[in-house]
Image (cartoon, rainbow over all chains, first blue to last red; front, side, top):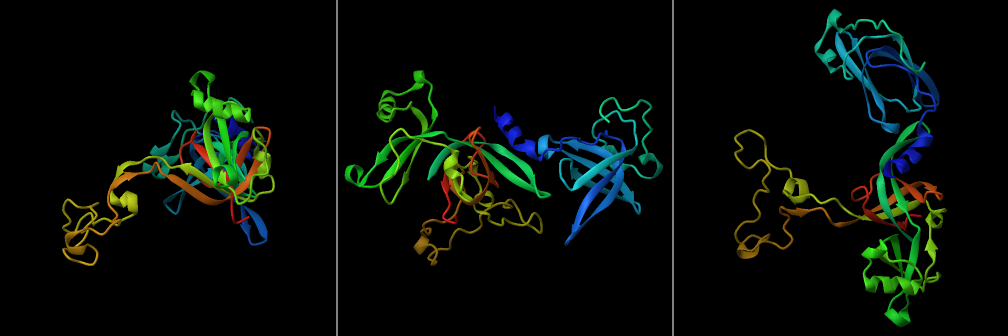
Length: 122
Length: 211
């Protein structure tokens, strides 16, 4: 009952279609950035290392290496400012959270590519 | 203008690209259980009740009180003082529609109990350093008065000195919440920000003065 009421409130803020990607994938995140009057789209590319939360609180974390420095950004997946998420390369993983990548550097950051195709969604 | 309800929980919604923290409150339908007037009670007020009690759990006096208003016994009863006699009838139902034109609301609830809490948590004291020779008093209140000081008259503590003690479980009013949405079908109020108390706790929703 309680969650049903919360869900009904969240419903309007949820995206009807979510982009399909999995943990381990390298993705392009198209984020809308408002600069005064103008809005433009900036692309953040990196590996998805975690997905958490549910409903409007669902987020995913993208990690990339910039100038030998790890950068992580957390995006609310239902936020209107996340215009699109495009998977560009799949990664084979055995766990849901890839926090172990934080200790890695150089070549070992790369994940092996998944052989099978995405199991569901598009 | 008063509504009783139950805090359902918090979530977030997106409004024009911005994330807005909201609390969902199931409010009403409430029944008017008593109307107090100057003549009979010495002051003007309206008493409303919310949430039915299981008939087998009803107390006889409460049952009789509700019967006068032609309703069932209520679990949560509160009254609102008024300047002039209430313009409603005994047994009337108040729903969320009463808040249709309202922009801001005050929410009264019972805060979560924190148990016996120290001064840092209870009153926001600064505490003492973690190091630099500080020993065994990292979260201590410090001196509470000196002998014969102005603060403590001749060895007595000044009244109201802030100390450790039971925290939470108090009646708290949080004012001027934006009323973001109303769902009459599910009798839901969507209110911006956090509201006192735990999810499932009873709250009183009033019209703010700010309106």
